[in-house]
Image 1: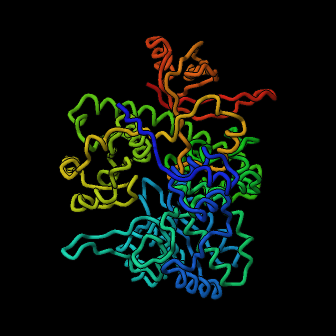
Image 2: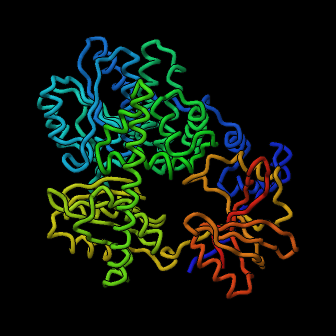
Image 3: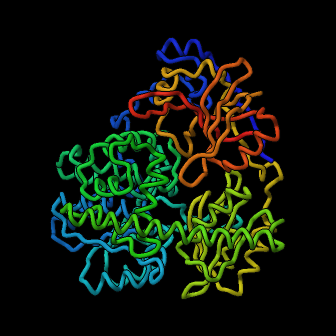
Length: 571
């Protein structure tokens, strides 16, 4: 059973309304996102790239810029080594573009998910050494690769780490001892002693900060790199980073760039997946565009997605975009089948009562583990790890809930794991098969989640009468975009709403459409995408009367505009 919670955060909304020329309702919504004070409100409403922080404030950035400036001048061979997810692919692209503009002799490598595994490894270093590479730059990985970097240094290579993941640590009597890799420069805003004001950047954003700092140090116009903000935006949304402070600016500006992108590959992909001519929002990146880029790293090679971003011909762009769309459709079908298997395992075994669900699916394609974990989490509102057999033991991915930090909990199981890394909300790991049961028991034994924390909370911004839903109000909500983690789309509620004329529509019969009538008798067209059949049946059982949460929008069809609400929860 969900817990519905109505936010009641106070402020002088009338005064804020007058000062910033917004409605008191919008002022209340902004306050609910903990944006407090004139400066913060002004930044939230009017922020631009002028407010972005100087990347040279990052610990390790001056050293990285100095080293790379020298390597570019001496025409040394540089290799960028990224990761196979959307963040890593875009980070690799950003570094290649920026370094090439400065005349660097640079190429790239991205690990194969199956053959190489995550991040920097000895095989990739050997490959670089055999190719005569002098300098390796990691992006979206490297912070946990101390042994591999030590190996590369022993071969005489220069190694620069750019990453955004948590720095590995060990607990001792004195507290945490953080373990930095022995690279020539480490650029990661999460490392100890880094005074960069914002810690929540994705890997691609850190890469962008590096090429920006390099350009400035070498007398190049940084504005020439603005087009790369679209890649930062894609990566930030795809990696589910908080859309607050600097990330909010990066994504907002990146979405503007994406509307008029000159990147042939992105243009072809946007057309191929049916987004051409639409107002592309963070939602479209997260659920339509980014999954296509991610699919290459899951089922084929991430180098295909990088090739799409780098292509110089429309013909190749169209071909690669079609390939990525087909791969994503295949990935989606495979994921659906494995999700069914995972759900059955939860329902039919004793793990159903566990606070942390550890699901071992030996035959699951390892690239799907994280997607499956996310879907299972949505169903049970539990932290979920999905484990599967790999060439060198067992690999897995986890997806979490707000009250449970996956990275910290994995640290408590470090002796059972051969490798792990990630964030509070998502993580990856490797372990020996004989440790699977021990791992499951350890996670649950050390879990302190309460029943309240294991109950999904629906946070409601305000009760909103249908009479207040006007086109002007809906347009005003656009000031709050982009929406995503950390800056969620507002949730409105209404009680005693009667649903009439309910019918199931859509090609797949998965959408419910109805006329909603609020307690004051105001009518509104409503649709529900979540469990449409169950929604329709509930309307029949309860005489159509219920409490709902919703978000308003404007439906346009053949020139006609009509206000419509999308129902998100009901009871």
